[in-house]
Length: 322
Image: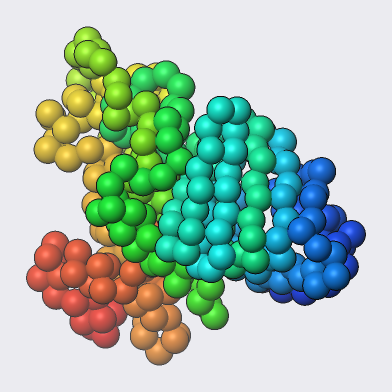
C-alpha cells in the first residue's frame, strides 16, 4: 500500500510598510539582512508578496533605494530584476543588474546588496536541490557556483522559462505543490536548471577516472528500492545512499543495464502507479485525472497526458472513465 505522505501547506503573505524600522525587521527575517543603509527615509517603501512551500519561496518585492549586508546564506537565492537596478558584491566580485537581468546569490559567502528604487522577483531553494542535480550529471565533491549570471542568453531564457512554470504552479489557487512528490520534483527541476544555466564546478571539472562498475546485485537492489519507495520523494543521491553505491557509478551502470537512469525508471514506476489508481477509481467519487497525476508527481497536465498516451495508447481520462 502506498504511504500517505502529509501534504505541504502552500502559504501566501503580503506586506506593505513605509517604516524603515519595520522594513529592516522584514529584511532580517526573510534574508538574514543587517546593517541597512537608506538613500532617503522620507519616501521609504517596502512592499511585497511571498508564496512558499516547504523550503522553497517566491517573492515579488518593491524597495526604495537601500543597501544591506547578508550573512552567508545556507540556500540559493536567484534574483530577476523587473525594474530599477541592483548590485551584488562579495569580496572582490561585483555584479550589476538592470531590468531584465538575472543572477544567483551563491550560498556560503557574505553579501552586500544595494539597489535603487528596485522591483524584483526572488526565488529561493535549498542548496541540496542543486547538489542532487549535480550528482545526476556525474559530479563528485563540493558544488560551487563560479559566477552569478547565466552562461549564455539562451540559458538565461531557459532559466526564466523554468521559473515562470514553477511560479504558475506555486501561485495557483489549488497549487499542486501541496503534493510531496510534486514538491520534490519541482525542487529537482529548479536544481537541474540552476546547474545548467549558471556557471559552476560541474562545467569545469577536469578529467575524472571512469565511474567504476557495480554488481548486478546492487542494480537489483536499486530496482527493488525504487519499486518499494516510489511513493516517497527521492533523488539520485537518496537512491545511491540506500543501496550503498556512489551516485556516478549507479547512474552509469543503471543506464548501461536498463537503458534509462534511476530517475527515469522512477518516472516509469510512478506513471504505472498513476495508471493503476485511475483504473481502480470510480469516476462517481469525483476523483479527477489531475488529482491522481499530482499524487504521483506529475503537475503538468499536458506532459502527463502525453507521457501516458505514449506509454499506454490512450488518454488518462479514458482509463478513468472505464
